[in-house]
Image (cartoon, rainbow, N blue to C red; front, side, top):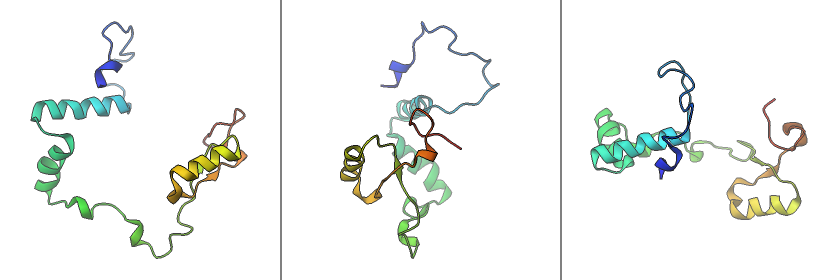
Amino acid sequence: MCFKYISPNTSHRLPKPPGTVASYSNEGSALAALVVERVSNMSYIAYVKQMILKPLGIDINKVGVRLSDFKDTVDLVTHYAYASNESYLKRWNQQIPQLNIEQMPLVLANNEGWPSVH
């Protein structure tokens, strides 16, 4: 799956010398996980649990923050989605009702109507 993104015929694949620039990529992370799976002959999650979390004494069930840790979750977060019309917003809420998604205010969108950072 990951290999479809890597083409030996791609020119300028590395625009900067290796080790000079850091950049996150989903493909890079997926490729790293694939390498771990191939080398260890284990699934990535099994490898992480057995070789990293277990030796460190980290219980995966006790890591992070759970919504149940908060007394009032009503105003904890507001979820927004780009919705060009009411039916599109309705589809968002039908597919993921627990998020109670609202239409993104125009002030959060750029001139083309896509989300932008201000």
